[in-house]
Image (cartoon, rainbow, N blue to C red; front, side, top):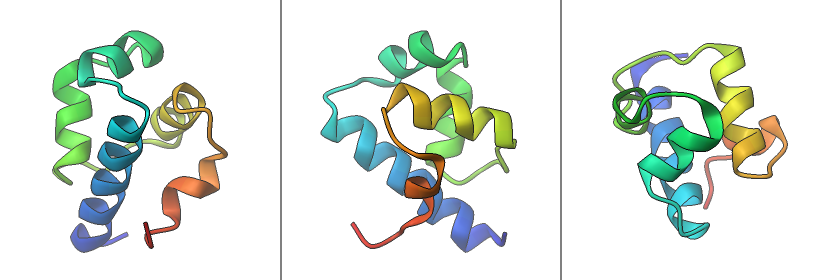
Length: 72
């Protein structure tokens, strides 16, 4: 995945998190990730591992594949 797609993925995660009225702190509690990691993912600064994306999708009550649909 290229950096543009990392940014799209991060924006999608942020959109879904906000849609669920969750702060980065709330998401960190549900996933076990740090708020810094969540912030870096949302800003497209890092390439998240599969297991990380799985934790995020589960915390947002989504199928993993839904994170990769960028029309929102």
